[in-house]
Length: 274
Image (cartoon, rainbow, N blue to C red; front, top):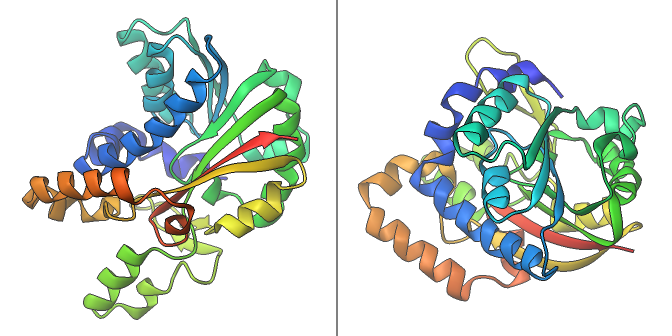
């Protein structure tokens, strides 16, 4: 996984996604599940976050009193995260660490090196879509080793079909874009000007189960971004914020069934260690 591709995004990432109307709406849906999972422990939890980016989720968990080890391949993303955490007075609850998931999958980094055992491993908004299916399968055992008995995993990945993306692309006569997820990958993604394209794989719910099912029991599947559009439609959301708020209410109230995860911008999947 290339750190350079994400380093160039770090300074503007919160402006372009985290604090966008669409990004915030999708994140609230994830936090609804995340908070429910952590509350069930009835105590402060220990969380390993993969692909933590600029630390928005780590900040949210730390505000609730949880201890977080926030990891990312990008040193610049982690620098932004540390600054954010220090400003919030939560630096003592969150430890940041640069980590390439390929190193964890290969055994170069061991579970005990990360400071576990953890109650939860969490990866938000497509972090695992930068990992090939083969590496994802290799990650399963190390992730299980990071967890305490009955520990849980929550991941949010981009699946192989997004109704919004397909419909929008076809409406604009872009058939290749409409079908880009269907192949699974690798699909080249250009993240920054002058940067080499990054390989992305689209993992469906079934793909994730094949990769992790030997070590984890699936407990919950939920769509994120079924009524709410993908983040690249932010200009549309800004022109019609009341419409976006309505889409969020509809999705959070009525569109939470597992079938929707096969059609949404993201699929949220929760497992428990076997």
